[in-house]
Each structure stands twice: as C-alpha cells, then as structure tokens.
Amino acid sequence: MHRYTYKDMYGRVCRLANALEGLGVERGDAVGTLAWNHFQHGEIYFSVPCMGAVLHTLNLRLFRDHLIHQIKQAEDKIIFLDYTEIPAVEAIKDKIPSVKAFVIMMTEDKLPKTKLSPVYSYEDLIGKFLPEYSWPDMDENTPAALLYTTATTGMPKGCLYSHRMLYLDYLSALAVDAGYHVSEKDTIICLAPMYHVLGWGYTYLCQLCGANQVYTGIHPTVQDFCNLVQNERVTHMCGVPTVLTDILAAQEKGKIDFSTLLYVMSSGSLATIPEIKGYAKLGIHVLQPWGMTETGPLACMNFVRSDDWETLSEKQKFEKMTRNGYISPGVEWKVVTPDGRDVKWDGKEAGELLVRGPWLVNEYFKDPRRSAETWKAGWMHTKDVVTVDETGCIKIVDRLGDMIKSGGEWISSVDIESLLMQHPQVAKACVVAVPHPRWEQRPYAFVVPKDEFKEKIRGEDIRNFLKDKVARFWIPDVIEFVDQIPETAVGKFDKRLLRQRVAEK
Image (spheres, rainbow, N blue to C red):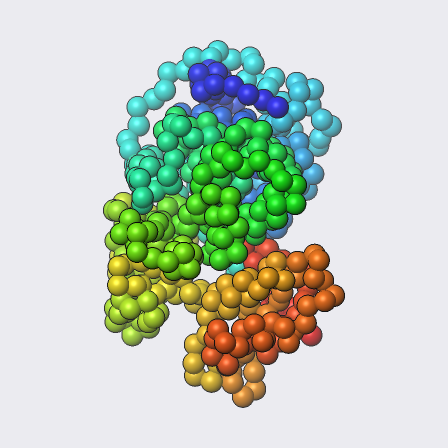
C-alpha cells in the first residue's frame, strides 16, 4: 500500500521530468506507458505533458501487431512498463526501433531479469534527480496526449489531444448536473484502466478539484475493488456495467460496507435496470455518461432533472436513468436519418448522432483516409444510433452495424439486452444479428445465467418473459446459455467475435 499527498507527488513528478530530460526526451517526443492503475503511472501523466512531451497510453490487452502499430506510428522514444508486461515488450523489442530506453515500474530498486536494453528501475531512476523542475511555457494547443481507439476492424486509430482540449473537457466534467458530480470532498476510485481515454480523465480531474484518488493496482479482482471502496471510504466509483454488476453481486454476498458511496458512474455501454436498482437499494445514484476516445471523453451526461424528480414514479426514474442524457454544454450536436433529415424529438425516431466541439478531436493521427470517413462537413459521425425525447435527452439504441433489420423492420439489440438483464435469473446478456434466408437478419441472444440458476433456466422461460414486453418479431430465435461473454479491451461485449462464432457453427 502506497499513500501520499499531492505535495509529495509534486516532488516526484519534478524528479521524473528531470529524469526524462536526462534520457533525452524533448518537446514533442512521445512517451509510451504500458501499465495498470497505480501512483507511478499517475506521476507520468503529469511529468510527460507538462514538460512538453506527449503522453501515449498503450492498451494492456492489445494484440501484438496492434501494439507494434501504435508504438511505430507514435514513434515512442521511451516506454514505461509494469514488470508484469516485460514478456509482451520483449517479444516486440526488435520491431520498435524508435524506442531508446525502457523503464520498469512497480518494483523495488532491483530490476527483474529482462532482455530489454537499456533498462531502468523507475524508483532508482527518479531517485537520482532533484525534486524541483522549471516547467516550460507552452501554447495551449501544444499536443499533450495520444490515445488510440479500440479497433474492431483494422488497426487502432490515434486521437491527439492538446492541453486546451483536456482543460476544457475537465472544466465541463466539473459542472454540477452536466458533469461527473465530484468535488474536493470526494474520494474517488476509477475502475476503468488508465489507458482507456486517460482513465476517463479522473487522474487529472481529482487534482483539478482536490479530491482524494484511489488506484486499484496491478491485476485487481472484484474483491479488491470492494475492499478498497470499504476501507478507503470511497464516495464516487466508476467503471463499465459488467464490472459494476459483478461488484454489486459481491457486495450483496459479502455484506461489504458501501455506506460512504454516493455515486457510481456506469459507462462503456448502457447501464441496466437491475444495476441501477441494485445500487439504488444501497442509496447510491448511478450516473450514465456518453463519450468516445474522439470526444475526450465527456460529451454527454444523464441526470434526472429536478422537475422530473418531483413528478416521475420510481419506475419512470429508473427508465430515464438508463438513457445517455443531455449533451454537455459546449458540444454541438444533431441526430439525422440516413437521408440527412433531423429526427423528431419524440423518443422514438432513431438516427445517427453527429457531434463537434472545442475539446473534440477532428481527425485521426496520421490517418487521412479514415479521418475522411468519420468527419464530414465539419461533423463527426459517431455511428451511434440514438433517439431524442422532447426534453433533448438522448438514448443510444444501437451502433450502426449492430442494428438488426428483420423483414424490413429495425430491431434494437441494446433494448433486447436491457430487457433480458431484467429477468431475475439472468446475470448478463448480449444480442447480435445473424443472417436469415427469409427475414434477412434475426436476433441471436447469448445469456449468462446467475450461478444459482445454471442448468435450471430454459430458453422458453426467456421467451415467455419477453413476449409481453416487445413485439413478437423482436424475440430472439436462438437463446444460447453460456458461462461467459467475451469482452473487448475496454470491457464491452465483443459482438464481432460473437457473430463470428455463430457463423462458424
């Protein structure tokens, strides 16, 4: 366990900046990190961009070729890595010629054996330098961080953030209702990996508002998360729905004390009614934001308006909390049909969400072809299909490519998944489109039963549950019970892999 103040951290950040200069890092150079959520990683978040270099966070779950692609495209000069990631970097060291040194973290001064060279121990390295540094003046548009999207097809796409973009995004995140609901009174734990959109901004946001921050460490478990919330008296927790649901189950089973927890921010995919109800029973409010790597990340936040809170029933409140919410102040947006017409604000008609704004990326790093496919006439085409209600609240109903077209009618895989998750015997569910000779496509459901109902639940139970909740043609033709559903590197269900599995049967 490592515990220190922001004042202590500042001295170490200065030491690291001096060390980076000693290793030859100059303004504009990219510095890569391949690491879990811990205090040393957080120090790099400040030293690198504040000295004028570019922080490049690498995804721990990347395929080998994707890792090589990112490092080569970014031209990383130094890579900081956890000792657990040494084998992965050793396997590609001859493919990344731009890297001039490797720094191993989360170890004592003694380095583990490695083929990497030259190699340094993080603690030994920064210990040789002074805890003061003369920070340079920089233009606000100076590049600060380089992040890559999770690729479902092709190589990951880079998004280059400037200091101005980060600052504006985090100011928006500090807004009361439209933001993250955090202040200096809070103790915050972010379960999202720091490589995913800079840990959703919490590493910077906590310092900006003076909140306490709890890091999860290397290879954390659900039980680790629960213990940290209880022992550190966490007030604000964020993560993807799959992890938050697992935590809720562990808390209920172990009677872990969550009494200090006020907010849970559920992002990456839509929060479910059982998730929202489960935390509500503990007096915890679930926030539902929307964003992408391209949006910095925050572009939208769900909150139940004060007038609605007074008039809506509990059921209506829970339903509204599963929506993505209201676009952040400063972000322009519109929702259009395939023929370019604005959708009706009736909560029913769906279209693609288009956005632009002062902290949103407007091109992919060194990738003009795919930039042209995403940004058209000044708007970013998100590929998220949404509805808008009469108050301007948006709800994602699917992704372009994940919508199911059956017999000429559209079916939302997201809505079916949300209903499946409300079945009392279901733990997780994912729905994909599969080809059909007559109807073009049909929904195919993968369902993970709760432990106590495995071998007991039947497909007919699921269909009977759905039949009075959706149109008959929305009910999946196949309901396959599985022990687990594969996930992407950022915790979303991997629908591409699931479609491939069905095709191979």
